[in-house]
Amino acid sequence: MSRKPNAAPVNDAADDILRFDAVSMRYGRGPEVLSDLTFGLPRGSFHFVTGPSGAGKSSLLKLIYLAAKPSEGVVRLFGEDTSRLRPSQLPKLRRRIGVVFQDLLLLDHLSAFDNAALPLRIAGHRPSEYRNDVAELLAWVGLAKRMNALPPTLAGGEKQRLAIARAVVNRPEILLADEPTGNVDHEMALRIFRLFVELNRLGTTIVIATHDQDLVARSNKPVLHLEGGRLAPLPPQGPAA
Amino acid sequence: MSEVFDPARWRPAPFLPQKDARDPALILVVAVLCFLACLTAMGVIAADRAARGWAGELTGEATVIVRARGGETPDAAAARAAEALAGVRGVSEARALEREKAYDLVRPWLGDVADLEDLPVPRLVAVTLDREQPATAAALSGALKAQGIDAVVDDHSVWIKDIRRAAGVVRWTGAGVFLLIAVAAGAVVAFATRAGLTARRDVVEVLHLAGAEDSFIARLFQGRFAGIAALAGAIGAAAAALLGAILRLVGGGEGITPALPFAWTDLLAVLPCPLLAAGVAALSARLTATALIRDL
Image 1 (cartoon, rainbow over the protein chains, first blue to last red):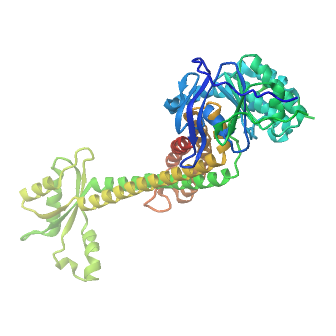
Image 2 (cartoon, helix red, strand yellow):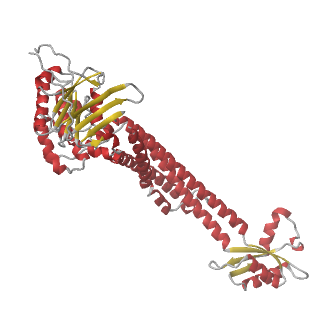
Image 3 (tube, chains in turn orange, red):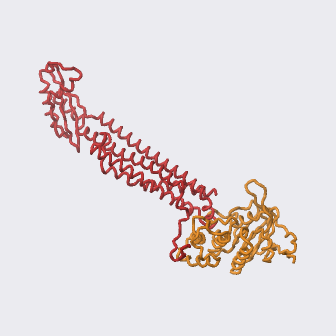
């Protein structure tokens, strides 16, 4: 069966949780890694970001999680123009975003439980307010018996799920995941994807950057496809296996 | 098999790793600096005490050199001078010294002269001044002049000035050395903070992206290095106090040299060291971390 192109619509909705208007980005004085991107993501939506290596997927996510600023254009997140934010405003905004980084960025000296609880501690919550929630969340992602384990002792899939738990523990409004199934087997990839679907069902806006065409094809979710830093039509797909 | 995890017993772990391979070296350097700072402080206190003692002794006394006039014998002139000085306000006692004292003073220059009696050797009058309101050199000279006595008053002001100047130099030098050591300690901690931040860039990045404020992250480094410096300060202070105690035991109340008369209370000077070291380290780490985090 041929997969139908499911490219994300470019709309003008004013209540988008995220909106790019003619956004370009470059690192320093280097070439543009993103060019003239215009799109919007409605609250509660689920999108994939696809494209070959170097297409700009990770840079796009960086703009969203406020680790970079556009060199041109406007990025609106939660209705705020991110270019106009003062440094002191960034932390509070970041607490509304969950990120699963490509290299996970787990802290090796902290237990799985401490890693998962990190965003809640940073937000200033008392342990008594969240310790049971964190335990439940870790159980939900299948790490009930690994809460005390340090990340270096966890298997690849366990680390991935721990990173997801940390990203969602403070119930972010938008969850970004950069190649979240990159280092796990097919079965684990599907489990992780089902986690994202469940979170999306609970109201979280999901954006996943991935190379995993099979996952994208099975999901039937809208796709932002990047080619050379620009939004491009999805390439034609061959018959699915 | 791993122990069953009980969330109710969970206590948040420190955000920063508690052990770092660089810590022992940092503790050693800061401890040595604190040791030197404490020795400086104790040395300045002891030297200041010696200077005050000497100045106090000299301030309370004056020496009057009396030369006989006309047919008066030197001893009679000295006795008259002592009597005149005893009546001056601000003088507790005036005493003509025995002639042997005067001879002892001139003997090194004249040698063993057989008939010193025949020479007009001036006599000395030792004047003890009132501690509260000592008489001035001018008042003493005036009283002697009024009695027609040929005399020179030495109120030791030249020596006192020198001693006070020397004490001031010691104090300011001590303060300068203390400041230099504090700056050096601050620089060492700044260097360590920079290295720590670079080594823990992953932690800083994760905390940042999870919504930690710059000040929150800077506080972590501030607390960590303040703790290390406090420990190093305590070690340095203890070592300095031990050395001070040994000097006190060996030298007694006079110290090992009259210029450094150690007292047991001088050892208290080391007490603020851990706190000061922690303060300097906290400030240095905070400023360095804040500047670096801003640039991340």
